[in-house]
Length: 107
Length: 114
Image 1 (tube, rainbow over the protein chains, first blue to last red):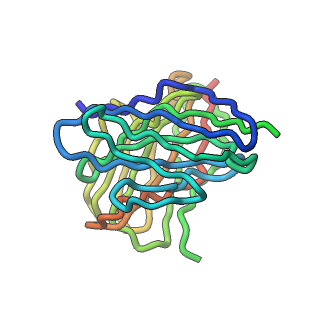
Image 2: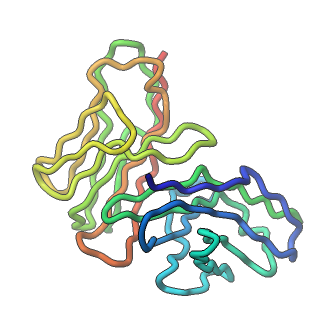
């Protein structure tokens, strides 16, 4: 069964500090992984996808198949990064989400 | 403007009532989904559709039903609401065959059953 685990419900950091939101998955195959974000009073939206190997708003995520992880990282957190972050795995046409990590960036 | 709309945003209703949560998208997407989310928990897929007249149950068992008579419309119905149905329901859509894998979400419908 496909599973996505986000072990941290809440992560608090100070502005300018590095941030890493953890995501681990279980999947029997080559996974397609994504990070979605939900800012306050906004809807859930795509942040980045692993196949694009892109950096969005300073965030990057590397797929580590050996550790079955897809951690989201940013070297210098900003207050506007405060939001809920969800890791997601796509299996054909279904998407499986983790329980989310609330990132709080303090001034 | 291309978007995905959900109504109502909030609904408080008594036990035993029939409710329908509406979801419409003007993005021309073939695939649509319903997720259920309790506070602090993951999103659970309860229904999905690949196109008109196509509906499938998701991995989380749900007493709700869905229909897909038109491409743009994917309503969810509970024939007899119960307090255990209290939750947030999120509708989403994506393009058929897209490798981007992007899901577009509505704003959600928060249901409270008393």
